[in-house]
Image (tube, rainbow, N blue to C red; front, side):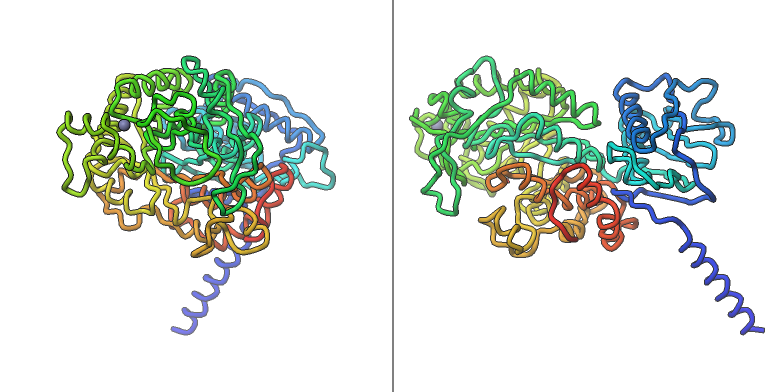
Length: 554
Ligand code: ACM
Ligand code: ZN
């Protein structure tokens, strides 16, 4: 009897395993929170598209784009129309075709896709939810739907299933340094396109540096006339040499608005970075009165950290910062403005009588883990924070802003490993994790010939590849109370050694896709093996189709 029960049990388990095996394999990155399969398929070819009259123009545009791409690939067009007589509560059985319906009860970035034999119902509360639903839906379709040409011999069907999905972290960022090497408006848009496909919602745009000032500021024209160009570029590890070729470029304010608007339609908020008080040589070369010695200064032709930083003892420096921020706030509607704060040597402040007089006036002292010059940087951070607060904005700063005393309400971007973020979250500050140990996309991914050509100065302590990034758990060592302060994760793309788009995408992909699962997917749903399979079976081919370079293999 016992044996019979065991045998029956084994049969049952075997049958369940077989049933599981029969489920179709999907290739969605980032992996959704839940997928459950039904029976049968939905026929895409010639399907009619319907959308709620409540949807905004950008969402409708994205739906129309999806339909266009499908039509081109299938060679048969369905209609595109406002949905009538249905809403998000209408049962699937009563529908025919593909529906995009608003459900105001859902979370802002949440979405649901229900696929039955007769209809597809896609629901979300707002734009980002719909954009993510579209992104997921596209990854269920045959890859040929991305091909922009008719595809032969394709079964234009998708499996019946329900996908219920929402992000783990609200802040899912990618950064690009357009100062060390300049990327055109079109190049930035291509970068945003691929980031949006993987549900990234913040673009941290690094626009000012020692090696170039990249944003037009009407009040200070020399920032771009002088500061946007350097006399040459360091090409090898020998920082005493450069190639002697003038290099530079900048974005006009119209171009900036165009990019901010483009990103917004992709569901991405652009966060500009005005890096201060260090990394300011290009501004100081334009307006030498910004420095402690009065210059002359030159836009840097080498990489590294310069001792020459803003003189913050002078009121005229703050007037400059605030005027620049006025124009930045006009251009960028983002709630957050990144004010840098990293790598600001105190060498000049120690020698500068004006900075020392300010330290005396403020009564700043050494002790309790910070020097008086570090506290002078706290004073700068606080003044800029207060100025921006007056405009309804919040600051993000690199983790150096934690040294000394940091004003309540600042957000810390943890880059020198995870320690700064762990400490800041314990202290009650909001944190974005972007540790060098996992999230620095300028670090080499391995030691192939191509790896060694890009990112040449960083000898790999370990391969900073997609697998390393995938192993990152942002809430490690963070207690439950502090966990709510971890807003999310970002990867940084510094471009000293990344000179063009070919190199840019070699460094980005497949780390971008790995990043997206760290940002979006709960740990229980993450599996590197499954991720690697999805990359091989779908996403590398997708990158080929879309013309993005990548680092092959996973
Ligand atoms: C940084 O990488 N200097 C923030
Ligand atoms: Zn000074």
